[in-house]
Image (cartoon, rainbow, N blue to C red; front, side, top):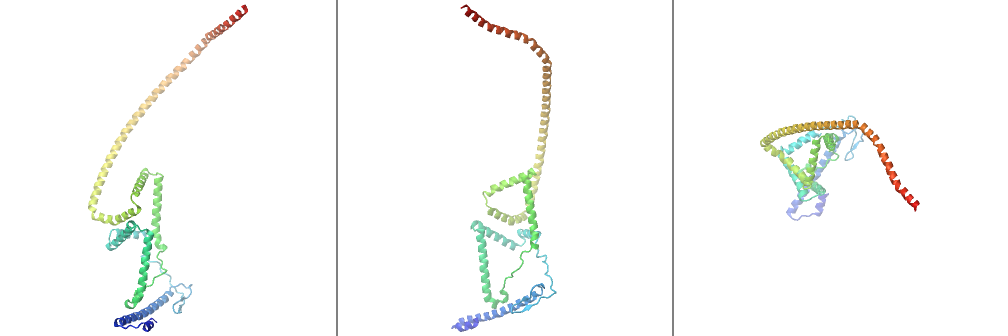
Length: 352
């Protein structure tokens, strides 16, 4: 229909235009033949797929009205292969190979992508949402352009250039994710127990370590953002392994020297602490002995004073009985002296 419409409505007058129209017609003819071959191959694939369907499913209707009845000897679906199953050890080994630059092209590509990502986020101040939106937009545009131009070039490049997406593929399966979830759960449980040990002060050294680390992180986060720390972690992950591998001998010598110095310092510190503890222990023993002797002297003095007071109590009681009579007589004399002026006053009144 397209060729007939072009023949009716397009009337090229120049030779180049006639050549272009002829090439376009030939391309459309080859595209039509290729599309018919693709449709036939897909029908054949559906026929082969019908043999693997369960017998409980209804007959599969194919393009063109054909139908394939299910068979009773349907083989079971094969289990996932061992290569398709991911495990934590394999991912860890792959990450180690990536950061040690065993495959330079792949490591360089990942490192360049990480630098580009952090450049957009930190320097250009892009948000993660805008970055993800632009990536999705560019992917959709590229897919539309490829799909559109591949249909025009199928006559020149063959039917393999036209591809259709494979939908319904199980990209993530529980059998693949379970080996990854188990190490994550173990790490989370270990981290929670470690923090609880620090909070409940099971070990003073462990708690002090957490206190120092939290204080340093709080001070560091005031001057360095989380994105910068993540970029430094990326640089360290891709740069430190190669740096260590290139200077392994020097690093080993420095580590051995530092270990020797630390061991000597530790032995000197332990001997100094032991001598100080022994001297403090001797001082404490002397103070304890002196305090004990002083307490014994005070107890002896208190005992002698108590015995003296106990011996003097009968004499004090007798002296108190003897001196009570003169005190009574003196009191009566004082009363008589007080009454005498009153009697003299009465006599004077009577005389008057």
